Image (cartoon, rainbow, N blue to C red; front, side):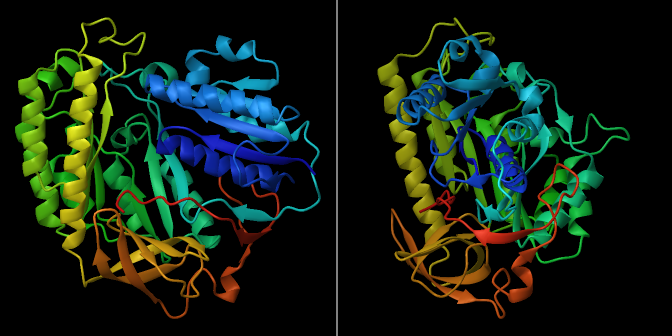
Length: 455
């Protein structure tokens, strides 16, 4: 029996694609290897958002070719789409798969792989990741992704509902909805749909599960949309916003039709309607033309806003983008600004988590082992706890007992009975979504890396 491993770089859409491939390969009789780079087949789902993302993917591929020369290496994703020629000359690359052909990848590989008789499915994550949208119709000055992902395409709502039903039947209690530009969901469909309407449909579905949303574009967060997000009982109180900057001038230069006053209103509205919510943000430093004054405005804005954390990254020139070739900010200044904002983010995270010290939050068990258990709360706090007999994927309550700068510790309070470990939940008769049903499979557990944003 051939085996396979998958290495995803970059965004949650890539994670969702890898999640689906893992189940499709196993349904076709291939065995999953937990360590990336091992196995007879190695699937590399690349990212090209930054120069560092390019370098990380190239480094990993060279390592696989060197250490696992017999493997059939498949390279796909945004770097492979933007620059396929650099992989064509690498001996050992079995296939380069464009983004538009990703869905056919498991079938193409299975046609030449040595499949076994077993169709057992080992879950590769504690939570399910589901891509509901791809592509982007916008052209931010710094972003190369629209050119490699194409225009916005949405999965029809009936298909999304069916996939969620199948995933929850397999025992998943959290489904992460992902998209390159999630807020564009449904605009390409006829009749036209929207993300809030999709969430309304999910809200009315039976079953014990919740959904978590990937990044949200604040330009689409009207008062009506904010009300739907914060009132939906199935949606985790975790809102990650693609803010990018805290200066109106830099936002204009980026081609983003937003203002800081709009950002403040949106964040305050979310925090007021959902006091427990973790509100996070993507923030860029060093965009061409960013002055010391622009950076200070960003720093002051972030310090004052009720944010739980922010992901900070330095501007990386991308060929083919509007900003490529503009005079840039010095590397030393970019590093210094990134360090300062990351330190501020750590302080904001500690302040946010401390609010819940002594309280009880609901969560999902995302990691178990001899060292203990890790729970990701619905509001995105990673809680370390002792071993307590729960299984990965279980919904639990956790009492926060100790909040430190680099760690949150707590005590698990299992639900009675445990959901995913209950005997009638252990056998899956539904396939993971994307292709028609081809038989049943036993649902087993596989170790998972920590997914939490907050220590």
